Length: 609
Image (cartoon, rainbow, N blue to C red; front, side):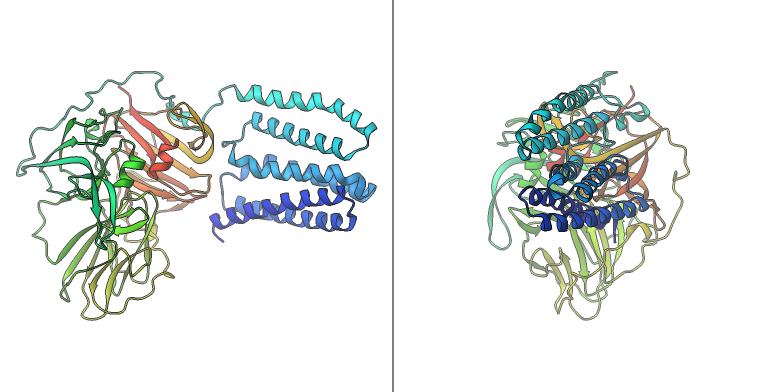
């Protein structure tokens, strides 16, 4: 069973444990002794089963087993031992309160991880113990005769004292994991002055030319290929917006005008390592462009590959409503392209998945033997499953970065992270149906390249990119000496986000803007360890840099080097990635599930000076 499977199993058993102990206590209180004993036996069994699952998780190296081993299971074991002991020696009636106490303990340790950060603080442990004690005292008072009720009051003071001590300790700022290697809270320390919105580039590289584009952000009705009409926010009245294409060495000059998007707009060049002032991060590298305003972006097209652009102002809403488009930069030295070269952004419009604006089946006629390149871009906030039925393929690039010696594969699907891109290459076969499928659906958001029957791809396994392709030299790796080493624990919990308390998506237990800024120096070799403690998938995206994947879940990359700008961190996963700090500025570092970022899962990476 996978780690995520064990996590789900542990949660399921924890629910059964709480239900069994509470059920035993309730039936004992109502005088059903036989049922109480049976439920107690069941509670003991599922408690032992949870211990086994936790041991298995520890054997997998799951980071967050520590709190279970040091606090949750010992506390539950103590409460369960007391309940069983009283039941055996004093009978069902006397065991009512201890059984309920075990139920309260099981319920508390079940709920605690959803509200506490990692590692769990002493304050959280004390508050938990106090709550269990208070609930048990209430149960004792309710179920006991009047003389015993009087004695219950004697225990309220120490229980309250434990809880107050926990609250007091919780007010003391704890050392945060992100403060390793010089991280500081946002806004503290050195002030950063940089030319907000000032272009750094004025001329193309030798042999290049200036390519100018005009983008108007405005509301419009967008009609999909099926005839479905949706109200959208658009660039130039379409969603996706105009395709921006350039050749290596060109100077891109893009003028953004906002017609009527009240919240404002920007252009962020996703995955493109532009100079910091061109990054399109509102409040950081520029002010959002309000209605009637304009902003000019200039940068060299010096990074070949498949990319995309989108607004970064109120991005969770803006991108979902259509403020996005594609960016493709082709190499100057390459021969003229042959065959078919398609850029295919996947986007969900009001619950309808589309390739570009095509929500049904798109037909292209491609002669047998012709080369085909499909540039698939995930513009949604959740992953998509991409499969090619009817022929073999090669994954020649990921996130705009070429893979080394990618071999032909077939009968496998590709998991495409939110914000990520795959360049797929194939040569058309002489017969049979060929189709690119999104989420295994042959009828929606599908591209047909040759008529014929299409195989069912729903049972195909995912291609493991960590072992795909051939190894090659990299400028740094697992054995390198890192100048900065940051750990980010991704989770959910109670936190302040932009001054408001919420059940937030957190980094190291905190929400934006309280997450400490990661501080680096130009030239530093920086390593990130990104760990998912929660139950949601988090596509992690650092602006302005590509990261080299070192390992996932302790397994080193054995295939082609993987340079990514967005990587999916699924529940329970541990990713280690690294990059060279060679693009000075102040950068966003956030989950590219844009709703998660909006709910706190974002921070900054800043260069000294």
